[in-house]
Image 1: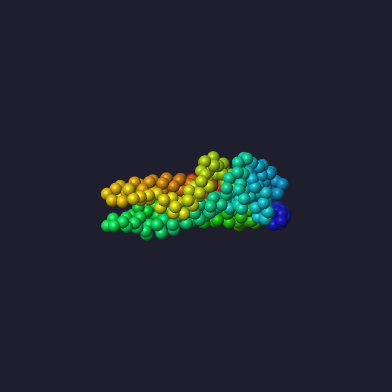
Image 2: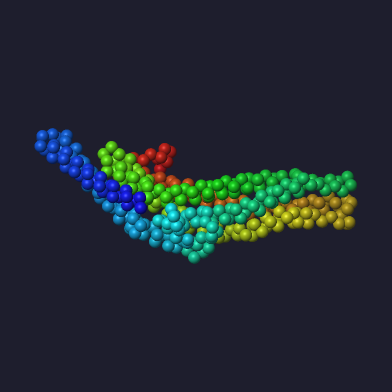
Length: 343
């Protein structure tokens, strides 16, 4: 594994730096040069610190390491937590990816939940069909003698809201896909690439701060970032279970067929004449009421989806940034994230 290759290189470089520090310290005492003494002593101390750091990282983040085992244990109540490829080394990353864009439903402490991508696509297609159906119906008009009624003014507000809803769900699907790819990228580079590179760079004087920063970034991405998705899933599980996506989808499909709309207009022979206006007004009022109830259900679902896809992951990123910055400081480096530094 690249991780172990980086570990062996780092150990070899630490040995070389110990020899160099010993030579500098010996020369300093030989020629009684205070600067060489101080430099040799400082490098000797830093090499010993680097040795402790490299050994600790191997003990913590190897496939059977302490931190890896702890993460896998914390993800034990979340399924699936066993993956292949880039996601195999971290059960939390595995679950987070499947929670976002998995093929099958995920299980959170014994309760099954649809993935965010699946629930989004489940409602997106019926929404598009409903929007198209209402668009066709809005172009219709009823004409009885000199009396004419058009559905355009009635359905225009609904079409506007549904258009915003479709845009929001489409944007959410894109956000889910981006986060899923990001999690795969984290699993691919955090421990196998960034951590060993940071260990190697940490052994050199000129790249010591850069190495410490890479180590902090690798640990933050591998540990904190995926664990925050476990927290997010727990926070939203109880709310998402109260939203019945299947019933909303069924209502959308029923409305999109047009039967519930057109069947609400009942014109009989008794209504022809002076009562036709009242009959149409009553029928159209019932149609609007049914559509408003449906649109409100859709908006409630989309609001929860936006929280799950955007707000909670933003919270995850903030926590990861704060942890990475503080760990980098502990390793003698400084990581700046621009505006995130206010936290």
